[in-house]
Image (cartoon, rainbow, N blue to C red; front, side, top):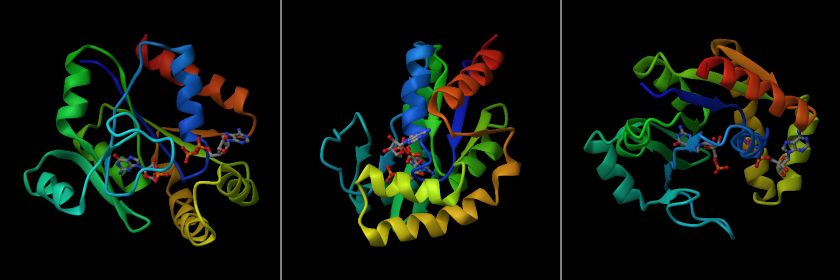
Length: 184
Ligand code: ADP
Ligand code: 5GP
């Protein structure tokens, strides 16, 4: 069976940035497109960055058992659609899930063979600076995400691999090593 990699860690830690770097280094990796009820940010595309769903549509998928995992994060819902993951796995490509910690825990239970990687920031100040610097969240969202981050960081030892994203090149190199080890 094709490998599944779960990349988790607090919002703003650099998961998306690291995954972009990883996919340049390991091009056969595919990224599973999540579903969410949050609104698209400027520049985000339906079906590419997320499947953007209404609350009702999301709830219908929950009721139908269509999610491998789903969670509420910062007042919005996020989830991995089974069809999305299974289609990619069936294609034989290793798949990356970029999800928050509650979802990663669910995947650990339902897909224990998945490789779990937790990304940490070098410090809380650095995480705050990244969230503010990204410019996608207002002050209230940044504060909420930092509160959630404290809880998420307390869970890091539950995960098989922990990588600190201090210098991007170093963290990307470490991530590539973990992924290549699992693939070979
Ligand atoms: P996440 O996907 O975990 O929410 P992002 O990949 O969007 O995080 O990164 C959040 C912000 O931090 C972005 O502006 C990104 O350019 C920046 N960033 C990512 N990695 C680093 C790093 N190692 N050093 C400094 N800034 C970084
Ligand atoms: P954002 O709103 O910044 O895109 O994402 C917020 C958080 O939701 C991030 O930590 C991101 O990793 C997480 N997330 C994205 N997709 C999913 C998903 O399918 N399931 C879960 N559980 N979390 C997700």
